[in-house]
Image (tube, rainbow, N blue to C red; front, side):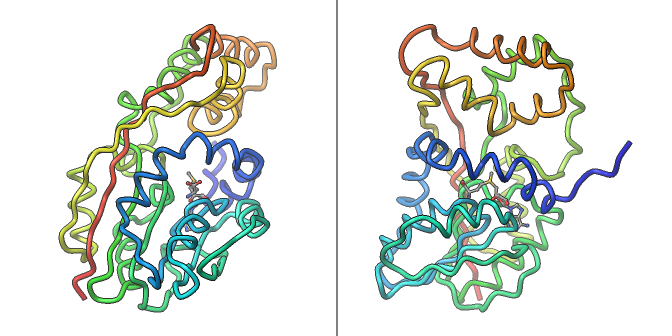
Length: 276
Ligand SMILES: C[S@@+](CC[C@H](N)C(=O)[O-])C[C@H]1O[C@@H](n2cnc3c(N)ncnc32)[C@H](O)[C@@H]1O
C-alpha cells in the first residue's frame, strides 16, 4: 500500500485544480448555504475576519463587501491552485490578504473579531490543536462561525449519486474514524465537545437544511456530481474507462429526467466564542 498523501498534497493536486476549474459552478450551487453562513456570522462593518480554508475565495470576497473598507480579511488555505483562482477574482470592500499556510499551525495575530469557514475545517490532522490555534487568532470575545456537513445519509446531494455509483463499483473502505474527511463533524455533539476542549466557550450547533440546484438538467447535475466532492473521489482511481462510463451513466439515470435537479443538503452551523 502506498503511503496516504497529506491534505496539503491532496488539495494541491488534481482535486485543487478541479475545485478551481469549477469555482463559479460550486459557488452557484452552494449559494443558499453560503447565505446561511454569512447571515449566521452577523458581520459588522469594520470587523477583522479570518477565513479558514478559504479555497477559491467566495466567502472572503462576500464578507469583504459586508465588512467595508474599514474591515480586514485574512484568507488562508494550503491549496495553491485554489488561492490562485481566489486572487484573480474581483474584490471590493475590506482589503483581503490571501495567505498560503496551514491553519492548524500558522501563528496568526490574536486580533480577529471572527474566524469563519465554509467547509474548510474538516481536513485537519489534529482537530483539537487546530481549533485551539484558530481560537488564539481571536481577540477575547471573538467568535468562530463555521459550516460543515452533517451525516452522509442526510445529504441527498451526495448520497443519491453515491448510491448510483456503488451499484457499479465496489464500496471503498470507510475512512478511519476521526480522520480528515467531509463528514467528519457529522456528530454535532462531538463537534461541540471538541470546540470546548479547544478552549472555546458557548459552543453550539444548529442544523441548516437547504436544497441546492446541482444542475439545470440531469446532464449538468451529473457533471457536477462526478467532478467535485465525494463522488469524484470514488471515480478518480478507476482505471477501467468502460466501468467509469457505466458509473457516470448510473448517476445520470438517478437524476430526474427533466428540469433542474434540486437535492437536499444537511449542514451544521457551528458557533463558539473565545473567552480570552
Ligand atoms: C471543501 S474545500 C472548501 C473550500 C472553500 N472554503 C469553499 O467553500 O469553497 C476545503 C478547503 O480547505 C483547505 N484546507 C484543508 N486543510 C487545510 C489546512 N490545514 N489549512 C488551510 N486550509 C486547509 C483546502 O485546501 C480546501 O481549499
